[in-house]
Length: 82
Image (tube, rainbow, N blue to C red; front, side, top):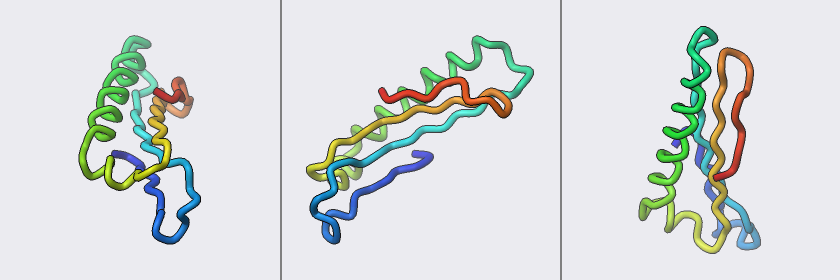
């Protein structure tokens, strides 16, 4: 996982959200199709991470949000919850 915002339920039992954020980068000169390839890779990775026992235990009762972000050069081309 690029970023896993794990809830600290022992300290903050009222937390209701947790997040997996998967980041991908395409070079500026890459073809536009590369953005979609990276988007699909990010979705698959986020889903794989979310299915691990470690993440399932960590999120507890919170709602897990899986976010994928793809940059092409300096421009964010994709940012979505899956």
